[in-house]
Length: 216
Image (cartoon, rainbow, N blue to C red; front, side, top):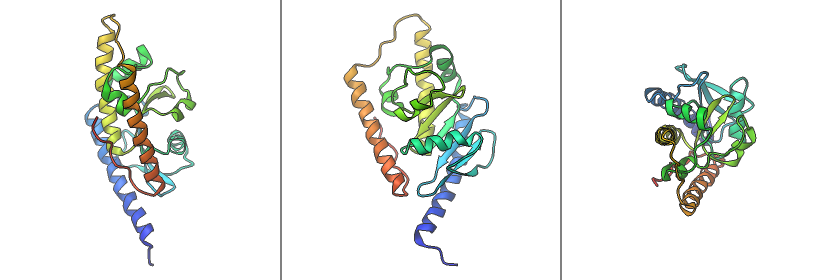
């Protein structure tokens, strides 16, 4: 049976991202960035009405339709409401968990944080609507939620969040005020992230993988 070039490309992307799912999960495990009960990882496949999904203790992902079921329902919701997102993980490291437990959020105090993670909204926990406002770090269903435009960017975002959370939690523990970056610096950095997200969404619409964002 003949397969169209478009179908062949989609199949190739599907197999590529299945491998990327395994690679990304191993990287997150090795860095202890999935220390959350019921942690999972999901990757969007461009041009296909489905995604790879699996728990943090799985060796292989499952193919899920965008409709989703069980834990995959949240992943499906994210992929529908955030067209720029290509990878989602629930879970974080030790200091990321401390940040959520003690402070609830982190102001924009690091340039890389604002550039790649965006704003951490001062919204109520488990606020699904906040997911659609942008940003790549949220708290939902009693656990951290990390987003990325690609599998690689997701892992880098998870590493960056843990690094920034550690510095902020330790600094805040001294009782001294931790000042955010100047307003203009935060605006410029966040605008670059928004532009990257728009470009990623456009590539997903065209059935293409997004390009990784450039260093700050």
